[in-house]
Amino acid sequence: MTLNHASTNSDAALDTWIQRETLAETMIPLIGRLYRENNVITSIHGRSLINQSVIDLLKAHRFARQIDDVELPLAETLPLLETLVTLQLGAASLDLARLNAGFKASGQPSLEVFLRTELADIVNRYGADERTSTDVVLYGFGRIGRLLARILIEHSGGGHGLRLRAIVVRKGGDADLTKRASLLRRDSVHGPFTGTITVDEERNIIQANGTAIQVIYSDSPSTIDYTSYGIHNALVVDNTGRWRDEQGLSQHLQSKGVARVLLTAPGKGALKNIVHGINHAAITDDDTIVTAASCTTNAITPVLKVLNDRYGIVHGHVETVHSFTNDQNLTDNFHKGDRRGRSAALNMVLTETGAAKAVAKALPELEGKLTGNSIRVPTPNVSMAILNLTLENGTTKDEVNTYLRDMSLNSELRKQIDYIDSPEVVSSDFVGSRRAGIVDGLATISTDKNLVLYVWYDNEFGYSCQVVRVMEEMAGVHPRQFPALDEAAPSETAGVPAAAQAAPALA
Image (tube, rainbow, N blue to C red; front, side, top):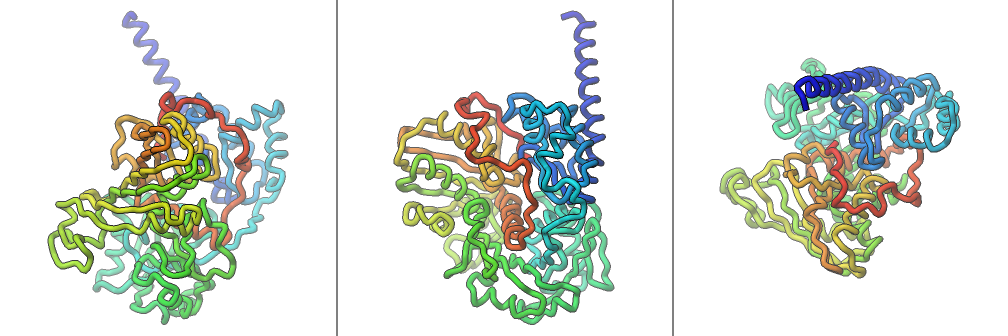
């Protein structure tokens, strides 16, 4: 190749990139307008486009190649958005990639006519939103509490759905409010808050991207009058883990303005442990206290379900390699738990986990079939579950990987299960993953009926996303999805060897 040819190719590549950037920049205000004015959430194969940068939009379009073998052209999604903003839509969740595929398959020459037909239930329904706004109170503002706050603020949209109204903490000193705001603003693991935060010390309010968060100081969950702050029928999310049974958590219901309680930890007794995507339909209007199980239970249960559905699980052992938590000591010191008194920053610490047994609360068919243990390791976030399973029906590495990849893209569990087969990924690559668990396909070991799977999970952020999904279920604020996901439809990737497929983006 001559120098002139190389220069020409380089210029052409740069020109193409600039053109794609321009299209993405044009899309951003349209996406924002649909979200804030119509309460319409747009995505590409489940990857949200809300509040994304130009580069994020380009990556989301590139992700589409995992399903359609080619990148989704921005020149096709931009007209979709331009038409959608003219249709006076009601609240919904729209998958642009699937809408685009449906339009091309329909043979309909008019994009507007196709969209009016496909979205007939929400066209000319501007301002119509069957969802009611639900006040949310975060009781405790630690690792999970602050991440929940970030997600709820990000999802605030036009003010419908879940509305973060307050946090409840014990006062830690004169500068407590400023320090709470600073911890929300800066995070050593998850990076800076996306937006602006101000503090109103006179009214004890933290304002984040227009969301006014009342800071309430209290030592008791039963004596707060939330109605005095304009909070009514609230969903209280207990992040403290201090109370895990019905008696302890019911203290929240004694406070004025509280309607329901969600615990961000495994519950004890007869409380429903909910793993969204698996048993969230078990939540009824009569359930005033629900738990969201643990991060590990959320990570492994969806994967175990699809494996049991397809191959049957005879028995198995779950070993979690888990990042250290605030429950452990940084240096050797007394701890009531075995081994947890030894330095978390210097040791691998063998400890117990109830996640394997907890799976049965969401999947009763696996009752008594799983054992589990955990090794705490000196990393601040992202963990791994190793599933060592004996199956009823044998399989191969390629077959089971193809199946799991398909589940991550085309099933009703695609918000819970992700799949990757990159040879270079390590734990830090999964910080910020919104999926409950990510199957590492290259690490899969299969010898007929013996299967070993490696499942990564962001035990902080991925779990928090699952908690928010449970909150939406309790509040009844899930937007309608278009096009509807047809679980019975054949997958576009069925039959393709997993080893031959590229890994999806870690969005």
